[in-house]
Length: 139
Figure 1 (cartoon, one colour):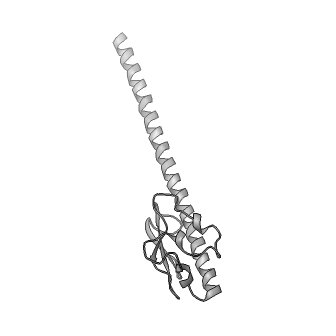
Figure 2 (figure 1 turned 90 degrees about the horizontal axis):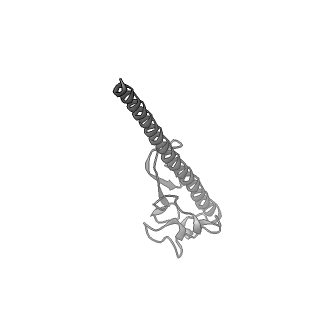
Figure 3 (figure 1 turned 30 degrees about the vertical axis):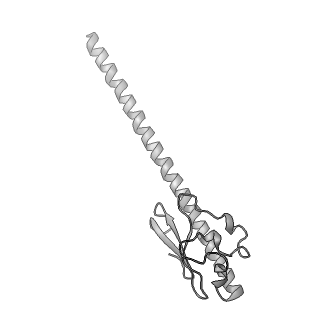
């Protein structure tokens, strides 16, 4: 009889522990998911800023080429090296909130430029993975 009571108590304690573990795991998953979502929201906001800065340059100069004067002259360089300060004052501190950077993939010319950024999750109509900012917008 005492053994049956102890056995029942052990089962109840085990179930409680399992429930706490499951709740903890779900909570951690939710935190990680929300952190990724927040980083992606920042990336999309930054992409809009970069696109707007290039478009302001184009309206002023009728060319994107000036962005590569003494900066972002080669594909693979950070967007922070582009000469966009007149069009977005804080371009030098614009940085991806994760482990990557906003990278120039097509050097700015008179009519074109391309900057790459990454999303961790599907967000705002954009799929997880690599995306580009160009005169056509964000894709």
